[in-house]
Image (cartoon, rainbow, N blue to C red; front, side, top):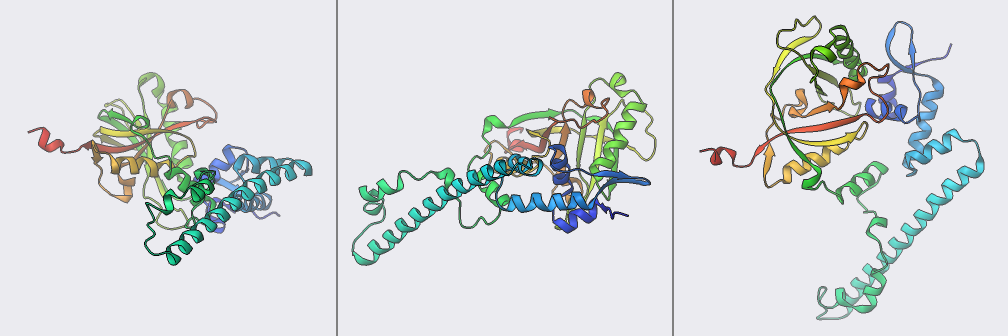
Length: 335
């Protein structure tokens, strides 16, 4: 009988998060299955082998779209084409790095051999050196601190920080919410199923036509296993009776910095947090408690249209990332 691995076993064995596994499945790179008597996804030996292949190709800096082509197409010619394309890009990068090395060595030689040479007024204005530097493209240069594909992606993101016009400032009104929290295997999927069923059973799409759907890690991951919990909220009428295991809470609402992402792009949390930290107009207004993800929220957009689907997290799902904020010096300005 084939040995099946649980999602926790897979995340620990391969060093990937549950969300990354879900993302790979959503874009068609990976498949899981359900086992009788077990509520969560499990992975076959074939799926684990495929995941290992995905990780190997990612380490070789092959884009996910091209990984799909390589793993789903047995045509050797197509594989050769993909690898040659990536080799060409690496050759360009190697040429750029070789040029950079030669220029830096030239700087050292000039500064050592000639007294009175000034870096800013002499070397950085040298026409010969400038003609060598000019063809270099910043987009082709990777920094030596960055060792992995994920780090390279982060470095690229740092070159395109969120601008003020990318971030929306929104007010979330106070609301009564039905909540459910779970810690264990695949917590997002588990709580989503419970909340979806509650919404359907109580016909909330008709009784609460402005309903909203929020979630957050509870608690956050504390180590490389990505083991964590998740809590989900759905806004409800004030007088509704909430059945166990759900509970009723009051959400105080407030001002939030919002940034929309496609499902799976959770690395954007870092960019939104950086925007908040660097904003001259707003500052963080959360509690720094990792048990509730520091007050950060993920809102499932257009949930009222998705909840009645067989898959309430369809392809193309969008989320709002939300960080609680307040105006800087708001206490002083209100006096």
